[in-house]
Image (cartoon, rainbow, N blue to C red):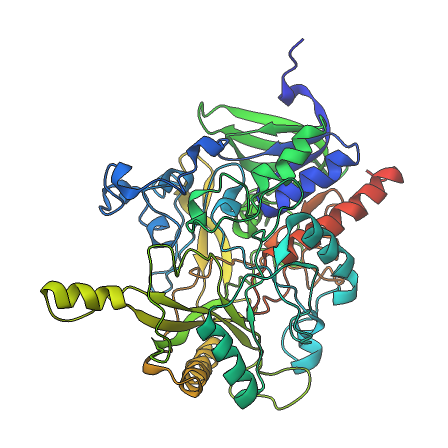
Length: 561
């Protein structure tokens, strides 16, 4: 007999089915808990993947922007294109506001799996230089956890996901459990050797959540290139076909799609959550669902939006906000600085199957403000570089006729480096609820106020200089340098706004992502980050979520929930 899933009382509600939500659903349901996994968007099928579809089969040949009229923000994302634009939110239905002088680009998907369908897949561990940064330079606060606390969970996540990469024995970037690394091009190997010899810096192949050999029932990458359009062999990690699939296989997890969560429901008598209220994304019907615990994995800003919208007489400024810090300390990696040029010493001819079809690049490990050695006087923390050296067609060739065609086919070997810098947590960077603006489902929208500060500016000036000096040392010609900071949000690494800590007066959650103020509500995504480091954060988010779930299971066993 059919049972309406909304009439059941679950052990746990997980809001969001992306990187952390998928892991929470998997970890809890495999342990025997009943889980309701709520996703604001629709489900997805591999039949939608278009990684092998030529552009001529598209209505606009992926050239016109007519299909992006309802997505003026999303079109800024490198991964949003005619092939997949309907995975991204409709900006007209999902508005947010910013100060006139502080633009912020919030790039989002509402679909089972969220941004794991289009993420860049770069997967790096944080070190104690990151977790204990305040002890090193005095800025901000240390995390309440250390690298040692998270190491077994990094191991677990890497072992399941499959991260290809190379060990480098560099204290600033801990090694993990890697599948065989992808190969560097000859020019990248040459660049690595020159940079190590002249500057003592480490250039490695990117550590990426793309399989280089068959792993956990998924096939090795076949290097077709456009990962952001889906992968029919599931060679890169995306939650719908890994963690969410595993959770549903247990029979203990119920996936509820088109569930746009508005707020956490509270029982004032016990000061505990009873579930959540959501709006059906299709019918606009308001529904409620009950559970013993509520776990927010909706993405940093969405999770904080839900908490801010969950005000009660006892929690007038939002749930978990007795410290006044909910929404404060928004971070997004600073990007924009770097350098690029040509490597005339390398004459490899490009082909339609060369260059970008290796969906990975090189990574220059942080070398500024390390635990030992000289410290910069103009900025705190550090940055890393991502880039590549590849052979491409020379579409900038001059001339015409046969000579022009030959010049294009002769190609040019180019190299580029782009910096990702740490974003300092500052309380003046924050999100709040816009008093007037609402989304298409009547839910109050966010107001986002963020700007990069003087530290990020100084950092990127230095990054531009160091990028150029490394390229010059490798014999690169026609070097083009940029130190301009990109608009906040362009890194697509939103972090903070519900930071963890041991002191409830100075943080929102504890070391296991539980709200200090409410014992059965958790923020297990990037919202709990205390600092951003300079590494891509998704691997760390997943490890933190698994660690938090294991503590939650212990509490269930003790009958505390």
